[in-house]
View 1: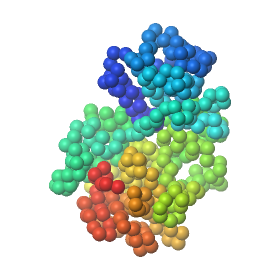
View 2 (view 1 turned 90 degrees about the horizontal axis):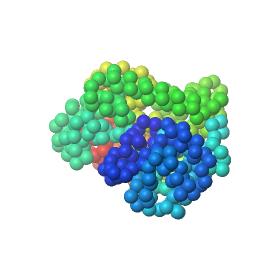
View 3 (view 1 turned 135 degrees about the vertical axis):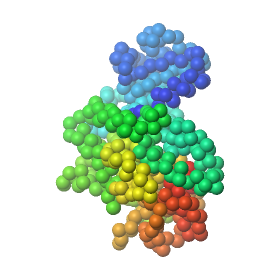
View 4 (view 1 turned 135 degrees about the horizontal axis):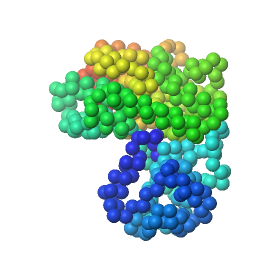
Length: 420
C-alpha cells in the first residue's frame, strides 16, 4: 500500500525481475478495461479468476512457478476479495498486488460521499500480508543521487566523519527538504541537479493527486478533501500547529470533515499526530483525538505546495526558518514513521509551549524537539523537563551533535543514526 507514485509498481517489477525473471504474469486493472470488466462478473474462486486472467493475457499461470502481479487492484474489488480464495484454494501461487488507493478500498464501505463499489465486496482480512511503501528517506535519497559514502556514514553511526564534513551533510539535507522522496522527483534531481525541473515534476504529481480526488470522490466531499489536503502547509506554518478547522472556512466543524480526513489517511497522503494530555506509559491511554497536527507524506511536496523559493531553504543558517520550520518538522515526522515509530505531541493547557513529538520507547516516554536553525532556545522542552523529568530528551536541529545529561542534540541530517 502507499500513496500514488511512491514506487509501488517499480518495486513489484524489480522483485519480479530478480526472483521470477522467466515467469511473471502482470495485469493492471487501471489500464486494462477488458480485464477490469470481466472481474466484475467472475465467480469468486481462485480457479475462475486465474482462467479469466489467462484468457485476457494469453499466458499460462502455474502455481509454484508463476508470479501473478496485479497492479491498481482497488479498481477491481472482486479481485481484491478473491485473494482470500487464493490463500485457501491455491496457496502455492505467489501473488503480489498493489494499489494507489488500496487503503481507501479496504475501508470504502464506511465512507460516505465516495464513489463506492458494490457492498457485497469485502476485504480478505487475515489472508494477506501488508507492506507500506513510503517516499524515500534522506539516506535513501543519498544513495539515489550517488552519495553512497555519506549514507553509509549515517547508517554506520560514524559521527567523526559526519562532523568533519557537516557543511556538506547540511547542504544535502536542505536539498532533500526541497526534492523530497518521491522517486520521480529524486530521479530528476539525480540526472539534472536542477531544482526547477524537480519542482515541475512535483507539480505534476500534485495535479495527478487532484485528478484522483475528482475520480474517486463526489459532491461536497470532493471540496472538503481538497481543502484539507491544500491546507497542510499553512496549518504547519502556524505558531501553534494544532489543526484548526475554521482555517479551512468560517464556521467549519470537525464532524463535517472527519470522513474527508479519513480518506486522505487511508490514501497514505497525510499523517495525523494526536496530542497527549500526559506523556506517560502507555501514550495511547492519554491520547486526545480532538487535538492533532496534520502532516503530508512527503517533505518535497510540502515545499512545492508552499511555493517555497529554493533560495530560502538553501540559504545557510536560515534554512528551514521560513514558515516556522515546518519543513524541519515534516522531515523528522517522515523519519519517525519510516522507522515504524508512532509519534504524538504534547502541549500544556496553561502555556503556548509545544513539544513537537513525544514517542514511546521500550521502558519510557521521551520528547523530541525540532528546531530549524542553530542558535537554539528550546523553551518548550525546558517546560516539559521541569514538569516530567524525563530520563531522555532529543533535540534535532541544524546544530552539531551535543550529547548531554539532560538533552541529547543531533543534526537533522543524522536522524537515521540516532537510536530511538
